[in-house]
Length: 65
Length: 260
Image (cartoon, rainbow over all chains, first blue to last red; front, side, top):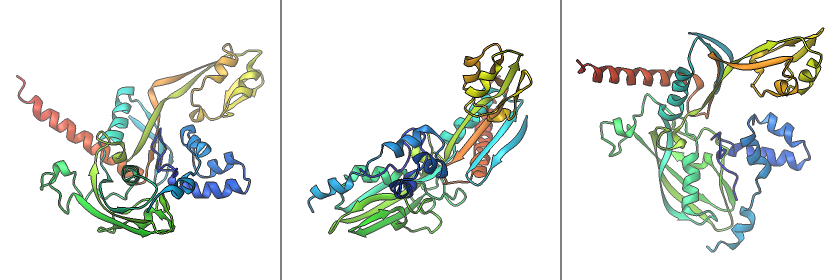
């Protein structure tokens, strides 16, 4: 769905880093390097980024107004 | 007790605390996580939520937003003069009003107090599509991490200062290669540690060659790392934790007086 506001495990706020990460990853940059640049040191926060898929574009279509 | 700073900036601090005990450092850790107050949104009233996220999920996301905290101007609701009823000294009202299509960021939240705003303005809250409206009113207040982790101002962790016992061995070379932090060096036949404080006691070198090296964490000296989530600066977090510790000890002293 939407990117988590905070890391599930450690609680670090990570939501604001997602769009930057997504744009850079789409350009083909190495994900390790992006995460290092963004200051994601622990593997809990890094896993949030590696595993996240934005689903709201698909799910939003089925919402009735 | 001696304190030597390894690294410090506005949000992060790491230091070596020597001559302490694990219980003492853990007290500091638990005070920061559980007792140092921080601002967070506690109540959300939705007037209209046309987004694909349920009210509950969206209000949970709003709650987790770190807010700039001013500990001098605000009281914990339980310690406020209004006795938790809610007044200008313990509550801040906020509103959000957005119409799609757009991504709603934390910066769209309008706060009654210009000091209490989201720390990270570019946090995406929800995506609105054509015709979807989000209209809500929120109440932010101070709280403690023991009640909800959203009120926690940061995270503290510590490890014993690494101690090395090095002996000459033929297989010492393997230790150097296996160290993930690259802090071991071979000086002739003997191992040398270039940066002790960087070792995180992973024991990979000990597994590779127990004859050449033994590593253990000290029980008196500690490497303490503090990461603030942004509501307060790292220094504010630590000083507030110490003040709270003082208060708790004073309260205990007061209780003890009656013992004969």
